[in-house]
Image 1 (cartoon, each protein chain N blue to C red):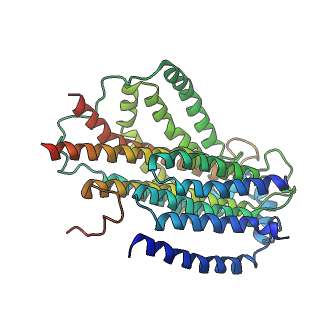
Image 2 (tube, each protein chain N blue to C red):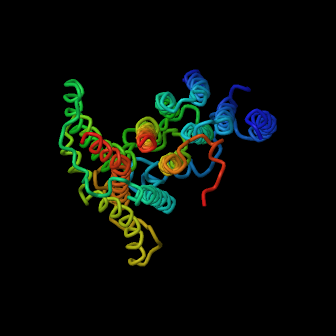
Image 3 (cartoon, rainbow over the protein chains, first blue to last red):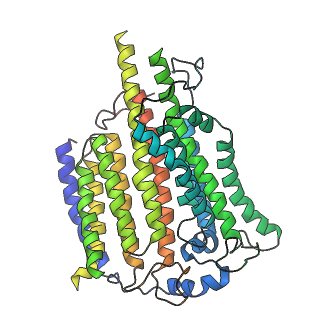
Length: 252
Length: 87
Length: 116
């Protein structure tokens, strides 16, 4: 069917969908009128049970740690899929004669270079702070991991291409990603070895407000941060590899 | 504070058609990044700081970055195809 | 008061606009971004369900336990939702790049054949 017919068909169906939405939404509680029992219960006991002050991360990495395990493995599988799709196939006309080495710096302005170089240290420190303080303040492994994964890109933008090459060619990136995913499963299995259920919090809890409190939540947060950092740097490396090879081929 | 919530909801509702109606992907990347920032502001006003941090890093930085990298790669593929087509 | 149902209306509005973008798209990358817009409508819905009037953020680092806070469980759901959005976008974009390499175009109208 042509585009016009498709649009008209969609508009008719959208009218039906709007009717179903209105019928459904009238039964929901209005904004601000929260009725659920689970939220009230969790908020009362989470700080005392788990010694963690950030209740959202306590739910993510302890009460519902199994769902977060599934989410981390979704991320792992997706990075695996992207790496598989972009593996070097026989249709590349360059072959592997040219290695991915950039020897000339990018022609960028001085303002960009200075500001990016100033930002790299701050970004790394802030990323590590956010990963390690997941159980105390908003943040956690995922957010800190994405900030850490943007740090190599800032290095590239500051013109220091040799350092960027050294970072993304390092085997530690793949090790970090796989180690993060395996570490999460290992923490859960270690709980099995101690006789309790999978992913029970068996590490001593410590005092509320300390950096090393709340047991497994801090460890899982660090492990998730490792995996997310490794995953996103791998994604960037996969996209940039062929672009870098093309640029080398064009400059010759 | 009640008025602020409704205002930010209306802003987010007004920004979504703007993203959909920018048909060129290069223009859509900029609109998507701005929409991500508006969503993060909405999460902040609705007292959800964890989710706001996540949305800023993913929706306003990583997602436009991935789209731009994909667009660059496709442009180079098309250039290479034209070069080989002319040979 | 009908204004209290505004978040649900905005969620439905964003959902319908995302769907309209997917249906009438002429570029695969534009379609992928409209899918991301579709996913943000679920964030608005979840946010509205968990909100409590006068509540503050569910982080007890500087407030005593027992103050009124918004629901943290729904925020945990939204965190997972954002992670899944990022992963789905990465995989879909790599598939779009591969489709462009094999077929030479990113117009869904012209991609209506199966190779091999």
